[in-house]
Every structure is written in C-alpha cells, then in structure tokens.
Image (cartoon, rainbow, N blue to C red; front, top):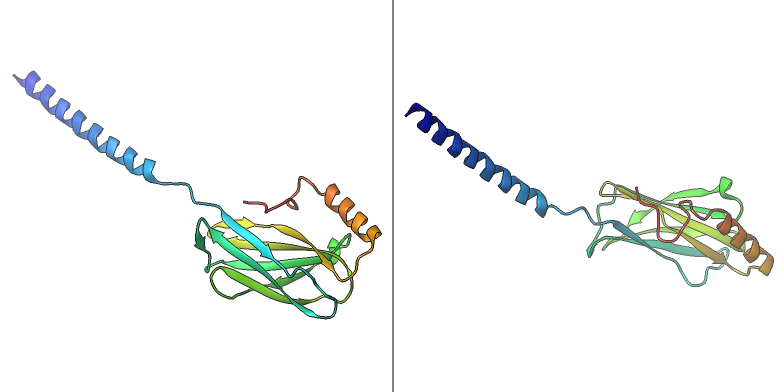
Amino acid sequence: MKKISLSIIMLISLFFITACTSNSNQTNDKKEAPKMVEVHIQVPEKITPHQESVLKVHVTQGKENVDDAEEIEFEIWKANDRDNSELIKAKHEKDGVYSVKKTFSNNGVFYLQTHVTARDMHVMPKKQLIVGHVSDEELKAAKEETENHKGSSDKGNGHHH
C-alpha cells in the first residue's frame, strides 16, 4: 500500500512539474526580438555654401517614432578629410525627428554620418552631400573614397550593434 501511495504522489508531482514547465515555455515563445531602430537621413536637395541648412534624421522602431533616443550626433566631414570631421549634437524636434543646423563654408563633396543611440541599439547611417558646385574630379575622388571603405560601417542604411 505504501508503494502505491508513494507512486501516486510521485505521479501527481511529475504531472504538476510538467504542467508548470509547459506554461513557462509558452510564455517564452510569446516574446519577440526587439525591432531594429531605423534611421532615415533627411537633407535639403540643394545645399548652398554660406547659407544655414537644416539636416534631420527621422528615427523609428517598427511603426513607432522614437522620441526617447539617448544620444544623436551628426558627424560631418569633407570628402577625403575624415580626420577633420565635426560632431554636432542633434536636438529633438517632435515625432521622432532630430535635427542640427549647419553652414558649410565652401563647395565640395561632404559626408554626413549620424550616430544614433536609442533603445539599447547604436545605428550609424551615412549619406553623401553635395554642397554648391562640384567638379567632376571632386565627384570622382569622393567616389573612390567611398569604394575604398565598402564593407565598413559606411554602407547604406547603417551599422547596427
């Protein structure tokens, strides 16, 4: 009799443990990986030297605007002169839009790379800017610089950490 009641207690315990384990697995299955933070650089179609330009990024995660980014900086440099880049801290406007004001002092090919830290992610998209009138030689040199850096964080829509 002792053996039977002990077996029943063990069977009930096993059933109880199995039921609890399957519930916790269902809970874990419902958790989704967080969506990536997306950064869309918005710059004027025409940038004129010695005139203030507003450079913007629109930051989203899924369909939601990100209004709580930890830090957003715009790094700007002239083509083939990254060592002399300038970092400008962006200001939050509204609806996931962050901006800086920048006056370019001369014509040329420039690069804008944003450094966006939001929701435990870091995204660094890059965009080429043409300021004023640019010669074919400058465009060719800038293209060569871009091709020499392919495979690094300089590509397309950004580098995610």
